[in-house]
Length: 539
Image (cartoon, rainbow, N blue to C red; front, top):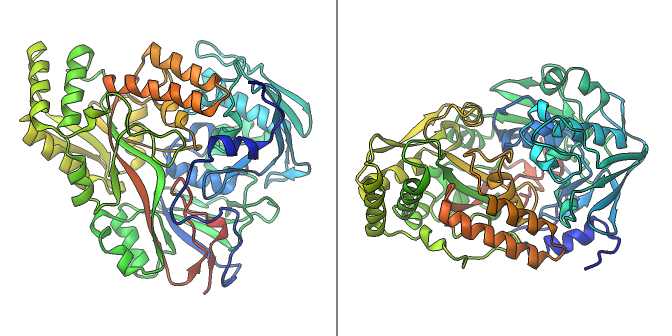
């Protein structure tokens, strides 16, 4: 198939055309009712970021919520997941392997530095360099020159002039433009490279918001953002700023919403899931989102390597009654998983061979566990680590109880006080238990739920899973220029994942949120994050 010249909109039509979200209108929508006070600051919930705010080293939702507010990249995603040009004037290719990217002229960072082609090339090279150990370096793997073995410049990047650069990939990949709204592809000012650690504590961006001075980030408390008056893209703020508050629990955030001390909330605690829509009529949402929940069991843990590990993973999966947990704990606001992706993504299927390992069957679970015991008798307690500030205790306890009852083993949760502490233990590989994992899509494609998590050496491959056949199929799928053919490869990947179970799929999440009486024009995106720039508020 010969690919003719096209822009981002054409890619979106092919790759995200089947994506639909209930309750969505348009992410580009202007405020429709009550302009409100344009100087009013919007308050919302968040998490203390795991790391300093460097785009290529941020792969979790707490940090990404901030970065996407203070930076503008080549594209952003509207409410339905369609990419919209932000800094990009055009993204074009003749062959899906070499892309020419033109950016808007006369753009600046908030410190006055120009945003130009070099800003992107330098940032991407920094993110890709092996010695910089960036969590999102995997996202540059497709570009010529990338190496997992040694420091190597991305030779596939070339600056043509101030507003033009080219990207040459190792092979044709038709969904490359669709990825470019992810944080790893953001530009950086030249001053960032003078002291990247200091920059991460006080980042200088070019997006709709910017940090409110030196002390804007109060660690483990909140971060205060004000409007960037020089941003002229499609996400121009309709309010006076954004305060993101880092709550210790979802219950605390919900209490502030109830008390009128919080404007917008995107995470309802378990105990309120059955009542929040009645409590906030016409000011709440229960909407499908591209979010997948699981827990990961690293093969390095005793009893979870080789054939014994496969049997125990399958036994654990079949011992979990997902339907019961989603009904009782989540009041039907979650849907039991049928695969490793999301029902709102084009190419999703409930009929992948091997997916029956997700079906609850206590008798079969016991039999599989007994087969594993014949290889090496089980000892110890099975634990699932989770962050206590994220509202996970109820379901972790429920899963642990089911494993106790259906497998006859000791099982329990292992709480970490904060998301940042849990993620640090996971990325440092110091954690010695299974642990909660999940994926909120970076861009709307099946590959994004698979490659970054299960590809060998991928930045979010927290369980260090490696299967050469999976790697090959991922590469083959990316090289397809037809979306259906690509998705067929990615479904073959999932057939293997159902055999190996590097993570135990649990359920798909919806975004459950609510907002206060004084705010309007609240809309939640395809990835569950509110479109903060369009929220208005009356004081």
